[in-house]
Image (tube, rainbow over all chains, first blue to last red; front, side, top):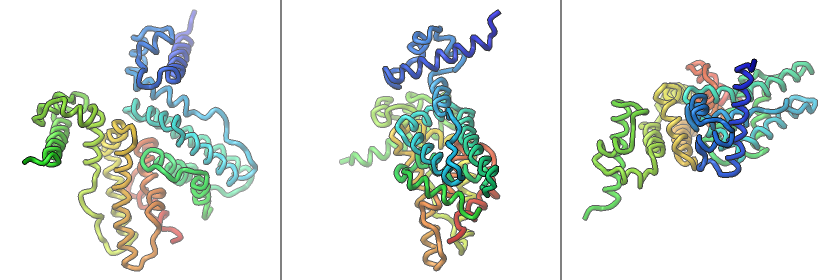
Length: 181
Length: 181
């Protein structure tokens, strides 16, 4: 017997892959649910039933694209780990692709669930860095403090206040997040 | 002779007022450009020509709703001024109406211009508070520091990370923004 979860997961993967491919081939403005469904080998009604509309589908795909695929690098010290993570996070979020994904996440996400998942990804990565610091015996701030002092300013500037998004800015935020430990 | 700027400003005011009224009467989901145009006494093509589509119009209306209508209160000291401003800012942004406006701003704003205007409003208000502190001879951080340490965490949590948005949180951010002056 086929498990519904198995088919469900296969449909999701096929539809997400179709969106990713078509974004590259035809661009965001030409994307339609029938086009995505045809590429994924499902009916449009399957897509509408599961995702509601194109914006919600794009939001789900964007969250997957923003999901980190590896733990932060272990460079042997809290400041170095956090600086490396901050630089990479800033580069990804401030890139044209990153900005488009963040926008997609928010646009098709009326209840904030996907935005919350993005934030949880960042918190999980920071948690890994801070737990390593704790194991080394290094004093470290809490996850929510690093969210406020590092993640929030980067995301705010990406969305609302362009400019000032470079490695020096990321390092300044890290220094500040670690000050007075 | 009628000045085009005069008519243009009247059309904008009539269309914005129609959106504000209809949002209260029929709700966001039932709003359409023809409905707005009829209420404002203009043709739908006037609206399409000027705003592109409903989302861009909603974004413009939301920016106007988020524009502060007065300078921050002068309570005689930097910390008190900033705490009062932070509490009010947090209350407005975290309210259901505030969240809906922030969302509208971002959704109909592909080039980020309206988001930048929102950020400029916050920076202007903070600038007033900091200039007062300077006139009193109080040491004060710069505007961009207060943006990073106060505005960014509030806006990030409104959009991405629910919870923890109360006066105590606002006061903690202010204390932190003013630490080590």
